[in-house]
Image (tube, rainbow, N blue to C red):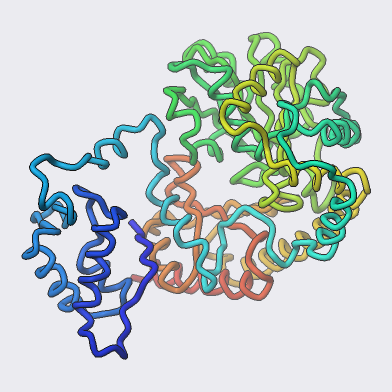
Length: 485
C-alpha cells in the first residue's frame, strides 16, 4: 500500500531528526487526522518516505510508544493507541476504523488506491492514465469560451433537474450528427460517465441483480455496482467485441437484468465492436428483453476511420441507455456527461441526482454549451484526432523497436489504449512496483479482469510525447531485466 506523507524532516535544523518525526506523528494524532486504532505506516515505509534511516524512525516510535500514543503488535503493525484527550478520559473515543471498515461503499482495489496517490506527482510518467494530455488541452480556446460566458450568464444558480436547457438543446443537435434522435426531456446532464453508472445502479437495479458485461471491462475496476450488492457476470470478448452468443445462456443462468457494453474503442482493450456484432447484440437483447447500457465516451476519438454507428442510433424500442461525456475529448475537469434514454427512466435518474448533488456545475454546463453551439468542439475534435494519431504512432514505433520479442499487441484504430500482453513468467505486481521505482506508473490488466495476470493497459494519451517514448523504452528494459532474473 502506498502512503502519502506530505512532509519531510528539516535536515539542516538543530532539532534531532527523530524528534521532528516524533512531533510530526504526535501532531497528526492530537489533531485527529490519525485516529485511535488506526494502523500507521511501518518503520520501513516511513523511513523510505521521509528519506531517513530506519533506526531514526524507530527512535521516534519508541518515544511515542513510551508516551502512550502508539502501540506495536508483532505481525499486526503499529497503531494509534491514544490521543491527547483519550489519555484523560475514562471512556474510549469513537472507533473510526469500525465505521470505515463497515461502510456500504466498498473501497477501491489497493492497486487503484496506489495509482490515485501517485498520479499527482509531477515527476511520474503516467503510462496508464486514461485522459487527454495537458499538451492537448485547448487553453487559448477555453479562455475565449469562458470570456464569452461572462456576457451570457445572468445568474449562477441551480439548474433544472435534468440540466441546463440550453445544453440539452445543443446535445440534441450534436447527437443528431451521430444518428441519435433525442429531445431535451430524454437527456440528463451528469457529472461524467461514472456518475451516470452510479445513478443507474441506484435507480434501476436492486441488490442481488446481475449485470452482464464484457470481460475485460473498466467496470470491473470499479465498485459502483458491487457496493450495492449487484453482481457482475463477465461475457468473453474477441477482436469483434462482446461475444453475443453467450448472452442468452448467461441471461438465464444469472437471471440478468441489464447488459453493459463499451463497444467503441473499448476500455481497456481498444477493440471496436463490428457492425454485424452490434446488430446481433440488439437482436438478442430485444428477444431476451434485456435493456442495454451503451458507454460511448470514446466514440469521437477515432484515428483511422469513423467507427460503426452507435447502438443507440439503431434503437427503435427505447431499450438503450446511452452514456456520453466531454471528459475524454475535451477536459475531464469540466465533469460533464449525459445519459439519453426513455423519459420515465431519465425522470427517475434525475430525481436521484437531485438528491445526491442538486445538479452538475452550472459554469461547466454553460461552458460545454458554448463549445457545442459555437462549433469549436467539432474543430477541436479534429486536432485531438491528429494529436492522438501522432501519439499512437510514437507508441507503436517504440513497441516495435523494443518489445517485438517480449510482448503482443494489436494496433488500436482510436481511443487511448493498447492492450499489451506480456510473457506469463512476468509478475505484473513486481513489474508495477519496479516501474514505479523508476518513475513510471502502470495500469495492470488484473484491474479489469481477474484472469488478465499478464496484461497492461498502456495509454498513449496522457504522457508528453517525450515521456511517452522515454517511458516505454524504459519499461522494455525493466521487463527484460525481470525476464532474465
